[in-house]
Image (cartoon, rainbow, N blue to C red; front, side, top):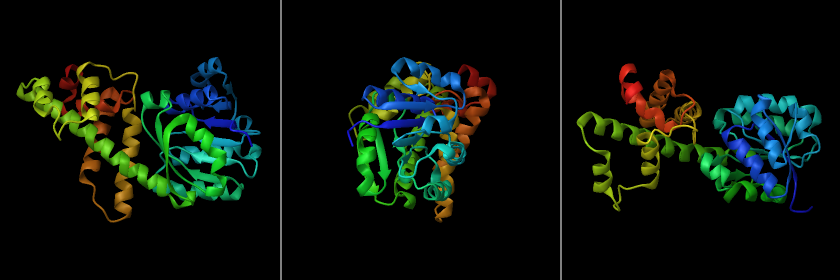
Length: 298
């Protein structure tokens, strides 16, 4: 088999659209489907064939990549695609699905003879568009040649966590990584909110930590989005971050761990969404520190 594949991307939101473009630029034959077709149509300019149904999209595919909202959504779409799926097709499940949904996804793969790869990605809009995502993957070593060129096109590196995609090792690592992302984002927003309340110039804070162990590129990047009012287009939307934060909390509960920061961060994100920031970058959780009136001018 050559290094190019016929790849189907199911779900062309912020991440999926960028992944489809990079796959096409790498020379793969790419088909895409999205529930709202109009959101996928711009991909035709990059040589991507936009299909009308999931079944049409997956016909003849070597690799099917799902990048949908959550595990149940991924399963629903794959069920729609089922009549056209071929046994032996690789399924790279890149949605952050959480541990609860993984069993159903793996069972579907087994029922249809698919080679299942648990493959969530770490990154936001900018690294996705640059093909610099971190792919966290688990799947059979004997079949990795199917997906290696696909992962190389969408990411800068692939971290293999095991040979059994159904074991959820990659998904669990993604939840751990996202717990840090959610906590750091919440802390950034609260720090800026407190600075505003106390009349402290945020630049004085950045000057104080400059170059030291408290300094962090992610802090500065998210703070800049807030301070410059550049929360759209979202790098990673508040609504999606709410979902991921709740998956993290539930995973902790399932394993007897109380995650107070993750739970509080989920609540902050939910308040920001209720204030009208659901489609903005997750840094907009900053507004959850203020009441309704203050949030509009914060």
